Image 1 (tube, helix red, strand yellow):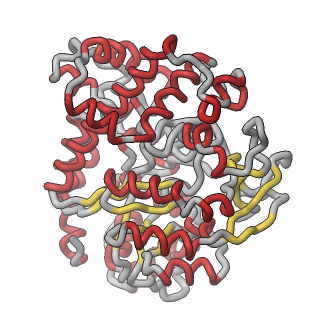
Image 2 (spheres, rainbow, N blue to C red):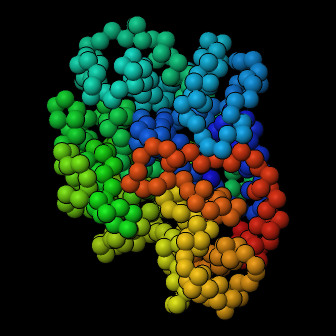
Image 3 (cartoon, rainbow, N blue to C red):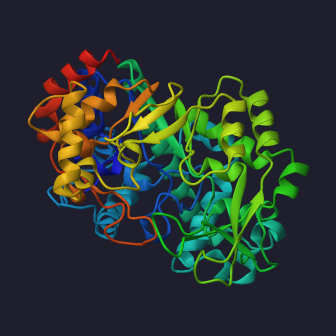
Length: 474
């Protein structure tokens, strides 16, 4: 369940009272894991996989209710409380006024100064965002040279930007403070939080702007090659993500400092880290930046073994999940198994009623992910004959009932997979309206799905609790 998709009186979920209510609800239902989408500052197309930073969080998650309790703002009125989808631009405009008020009323204290001093990434991110606002949010490669090359040259006086820089520091401090309090509460309920770490970062990010040697870029910062995947079942022309490609040779010389810092910071925010696009640690699709689609490109080997040897030596207790979906060569699975990472299965991709469905015990089974249709949509779009075959298989294996979607979820819970993740839209039997992202497309309606009431889920809690209990999971 993405935080942004939680019910909230301001049009999108945040780290406030509704998130605590959700924690109470899922604890009551018997869940032990809450998986999130990335919470970094949303970039191009509002995608959490094109963030402005791998470290910072998006200010839409700051709870205005919490700021009111602290006396930093007056009472903020409801805004888009019952909106059917997340309207990011309207929400940002509304929240900006209240966040600015809180900033002006905030008095830096010892905890704030310690946070600023401890987090090296914060300074470059704050300057990056101040420059970005000055340049009408354009990508940094289009900024004046003194701003574009500031990380290397430091030839610009920052005095005119000091208020905006301090504002960004304040936002990140409040986000970290509110998130760590929420996570502590969730953990006390016996629930672990699984965060999602994108493999790539966006070109338009503080990571790239301040760490250019880590990427294959021109002298002016433009990517020479970009990331994506070749044609597959999602798209005939592949997926052209546009992220810059890593310079692995430089990263080796730097002892994988980029990954050490990024993973190290994420492990403090989450209990479990799901590594998105895990296959790229073995081989990645390298597309010339001039190509309009992902059809033209080549697979290139990455030093995954060296990366994980270093990371696990540095962080021996880290809990990593490998997103190992797609058309993979055997070496990807060998890399996963060498480091004993659990992989993934997706029920709507793998369920075949005409054959036995077996799952690797050391794995996660998803009924579906944010990148595919819900179980109800999957079932709805099957032919009558296919639907009958699904129902017959479920009946044969003891999964009875009137609702075939409910029966599918009971089957998922019964499998041998170490963990089972079921998206909220599936628990609520929502059809295609619950799809979060349509791979290969950009913009609305992607990433806009939300609940505007807890009632449908809370009415389901007794039944869900019983399903989890009878499955033997906890």
